[in-house]
Length: 331
Image 1 (cartoon, rainbow, N blue to C red):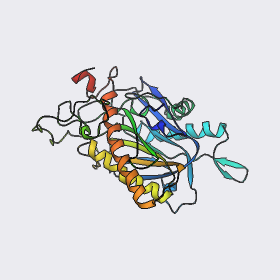
Image 2 (cartoon, one colour):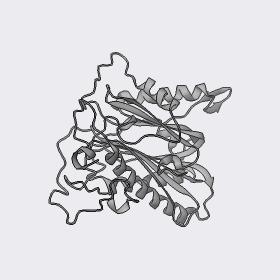
Image 3 (cartoon, one colour):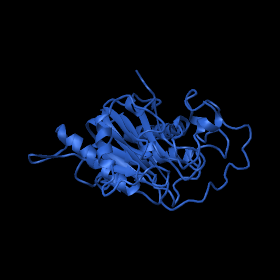
Image 4 (cartoon, rainbow, N blue to C red):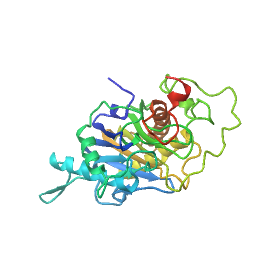
């Protein structure tokens, strides 16, 4: 049964670890078998771990998991928790008798959102990463959970969103997951309508469509902000068989989904990162044209996931940020 989530791609599981007192959390994507992956970084202030190994020229072809985390640089510890879980289950790249789990990660900034960040010498993200990996499954929550727990956009609470679709003309699917913590707005000005409305499937983020007329504040500068204090992290996935170079191109094309759903985007104030993964179930008949179709579908699906993340978010106790969409515009 399809769930309109990235886990509609067989072989992908997602788990969250959420700490409401911390107002932060971790989202882990685990792969039943190692996957081909690529990455594209567009934001001016990214924070990442092991993304260099995704370059097509690097030796290792596949990875075991991906991690998205709050906590800024402290959140990079979350990957160590996921590595620990994978090591316990015997996963990893074989180096002689040793197994080395390969887990790229990216983080978003949520340190000023009102949560209790007085964690002492060591931040809690390693344990949160381990818990997220342990919780991974096909069903997972959306909104203010995991890496999206303490996320915010310019005017509304951010969160975790996910969507999937079948690629027109091909026997493959694409899915997307986003942790939305953007400098810009996901809605058009201060109204309820989403920039991603043209790509909505059913009423997945309210079914409002676009505004009758473009409001005067549609392109207003969102707010004053600190450099590096905003980021949208995303993963797109397909069951098509791709090379590392093709996965990289898929990540590049999928970035257009952020541009269709957030205004402005990819600024010096953001650390936007998009990963792309291939589980390799279906071979491409035409590597060029078929990849173009998949990339187009991935961009539209990611735009939907971004809007769903904000639409699904809920307010947190003591949250030092904007209200949730549902608090302002309805249930």
